[in-house]
Image (cartoon, rainbow, N blue to C red; front, side, top):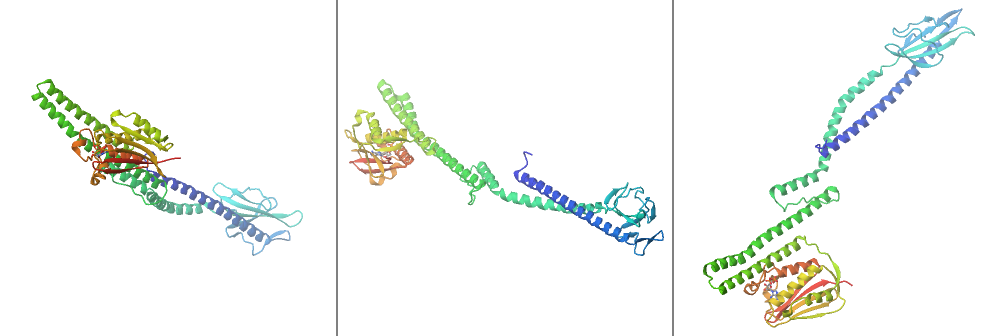
Length: 446
Ligand code: ADP
């Protein structure tokens, strides 16, 4: 039963239900029609016997039957018995019992060995003492004949009916289950061809199947996104890690071959250390980025006093960064603190990296009508207008010789992503050799 498809199960269920209904209806028709037949037969026997009764007379002490008396008419036998129940006239049907007692005026069914008879007796009195019994006999119509006909009809009609019902039911069930078949074949094609871009795309509607299809499409979207992110991660990671690895490799080869003094070895080792630091930075930024993009790192928003929070971040920075902090009071917003810390830290690190040697970093918290504004400003090298839209892309570095030392080109794409997760956005004002001002516009709360 478990392996039978739902379509077949539904079809079978309705078929069974219909068969029960048909049998019940036939039973009812049969019961009603046989009661009608009985009633008609009883009326017939009664009117025939009564008709014959009026044709009996007793003239001069003798029984006299008129010409209109019929011993056999319309399948009804009429018999005349004496008061002592001795047959006076008429012929008893062969298989009717001879000693059936008399009951005046009552029509009843008497069963004999092979047959059943309707029997009706009427007493025809001639005077106070004498009279005759008039008995009507009628074979109970062979209901079997009717039943036989009925069974023949049903025997022919039922299989045809079942066949039509099965085909129709199966066809309807198949149509109803079509969306499910689509879902199965799409899921199969995705599985077999590894084609994550395929979608079920069931047309409008809000039934169980369309909802299931939508859920599947959403799941495929997510799967495709995370699959793409993983692919991107692998290719980015291998591409970005190739440079420091090859630097480390050649430094090792060179050091092993040519380094003789402790000083030379020291220099090679520091280069290896710098490249390892860079690699570990790239790997952790890549992980951050991928987690944010895949949504595996879920934001947990907490209503926060932004001024106080940003101040606490600035307080933890090293003194050499020369931070000048300024904040308006009571600016509230819902933020994921870990993410915002990462955003501000990235901006401060960049401001320090690309700032002038003894320059300053201004961190300011203010607000406009809608947003809290967190800006990190430096007086460093600035960014050319033509580069300003590109720096948000993954791995984009304006001057790779300057940033290559420690950067991965991922910091600002992470910043942008975190701003989006907070339903905010980043803006940049920058001029080469004057400095840059990065501002995070974060929807504020009351
Ligand atoms: P990186 O790890 O290279 O710093 P980011 O994504 O943080 O990567 O920054 C991308 C590029 O944008 C940097 O390589 C740099 O050229 C430029 N940039 C970022 N911040 C500043 C800044 N404050 N001043 C000047 N240039 C900047």
